[in-house]
Amino acid sequence: MARSRPPRSPPLVPALALVLALTASPIAARVHVQSLPADAGRPAGQGVGGEDYQGHQVLKVFVADNGTLDLLRSFEGNPDVDFWTPASGLNPTVDVLVAPDVGRRLKEELTRSGASYTVNIEDVQAAVEEESPVMSDTERELLVGRSGHPLTWTAYHSADDHHQYMDFIEQNYKGLCETFSIGTSTEGRDLRGVKCGLGKREVWIDGGIHAREWVSPAVVSCLIREYSQRSVNHQDLLRKHTIYMLPILNPDGYEYTRSGGRRRRFWRKTRSRNPGSSCIGADPNRNFDAHWGETGSSMDPCSDIYAGSRPFSEPETRALRDFLLGRVHAMKMYISFHSYSQMLFVPYAFSKERPADYKELLRVAKAGEKAIRRTSGKAYRVGQASQLLYEAAGGSDDWAKSKAGIKYSFTFELRDKGRQGFLLSASQIEDTCTEIVAAVDTMITTSAEQDDKA
Ligand code: 0X9
Ligand code: ZN
Image (cartoon, rainbow, N blue to C red):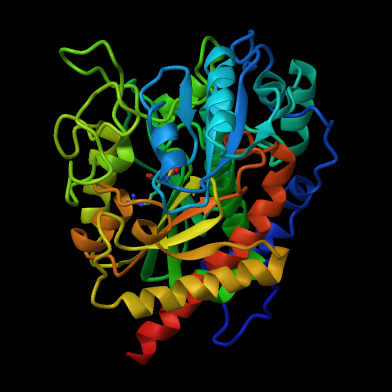
C-alpha cells in the first residue's frame, strides 16, 4: 500500500485542495468499500465460454541443454502449440500451452530425450473458467448504484467498463483528473485514458498492448484509482507531475480475448486485416519504429510477433506515437505494462546495446523493484529484456527512449512467474496493484530527485 505522506508546504494549490476535499465526500468514501459478491465482474453472458481449451495443458519444461531447446523449437509454428515464454535459451524453463494430441507427443519426446517438465496448468479450460468471477445483471446494477461505476479490482472487465470508470473519475475529480483520447483502434474503439495531477513533469503509463495480458489493464485502472480516489496519499507527487494513464492500448485484441469462441483467450496482436493474407493483426510491440523488423520479430502476418507491413502500420501505435511526440517537451517517463514473469526492463530490447544514461535508468528501476519487495515480498528481475528474455526490436519502450527522447523508459512484466501465467486469477489483482503503486510512486520520485540533482 502506498505510504500516506503528510502534506508539505507550500500549501496545496486550490484545484488539488478541492479534489482532496472531494475524496473525503460520501461518494468517494463509498467507492472504497468493496464488499461485493464474490462473482462480481464479467458482464452477464460474456464469459469465455464453450469447450475451447478442453484437454489443453500448460507445461513448464526445464531446459537442460541445447537438445531440449531444439526439441521445443521443432514444435514452433504448430497451431496447437503456443509458447507462453520463449525458447530463447536465456531462461532455464519454457512455458508452453499444448492441445491434447500434440501435448501427448511433446511429453513423450521430452521423456525420451531425458528432459523434464511439470504440468503447470492441468486443465486450461477449467483455469479459463475460474480466472475471473461472473456478475449477474442484478449484481451489476447494485454495484453501479453503490460505486457509481461498474469497475472492480476483483474481476477482469470489458473495455466499456473501463471507459465508464474513466467517465466517473472525470466527473468526480474535476480539477485533478480528466479523460483524454489519443485516437481510435482498427475496429473504431476509443483509445482513451485519464490524466491526473497538476505538475509540469509528465509521465506516460500504458497497458493492454498485448491482448491476452489481462492483468495489465487492471493494474493501469488501479493506478487511475490511486491517483484520483486515493490522491490524498500522493499530494506532493501530484503537485509536481501530470500522469497520463491509458489502460487498454489494444482494445480490439482485448475484446477479442473476452469474446469466447474458439481459441480466442490467448490472442496477442491487434485485429487489423493483412492484405494478401487470411491472418489477422500485427504485434503492436514489434510495430514501433525502433530497429523495426530486426531481431525477435517476424515478417509473416500469421506469426504472433508479426512486425506489421511497415513501422506504425497499426492505428493504435500511430496514435501513441503522435500523442507522445506532441508532448516530448514535458514527458519524462514512459512505462508500459505487460505480463507475465515478474520483470522490469530497462532499454534497449532490440540488442544488448545500452543507452548512454543506462546507469541512471537502472537506478530508478532498482528503486522500483525494491519498493515491490518491501511491499509484497515479490521478486522482480531488473535488467534489459535482451539479457533477461530475448532480443526484440520495434518495441514501444525502445522507441520512447531512442526516438521520442523520453529519458526514463521502462517495461514491466507483471505477475506471476507461470503458475497461472496469462490466466492470473482476478483475486491477485489487488495485491499486484499494491506492489505496482509502490513501484511507480518510487520510480517517479527517484527520477525527479535524480534530475533535480543533475
Ligand atoms: O515481447 C514483448 O513484447 C514483451 N514480452 S511479452 O511476453 N509481454 O510479450 C517484452 C517487451 C520488452 N521490450 C521490447 N521488446 N521492446
Ligand atoms: Zn506483452
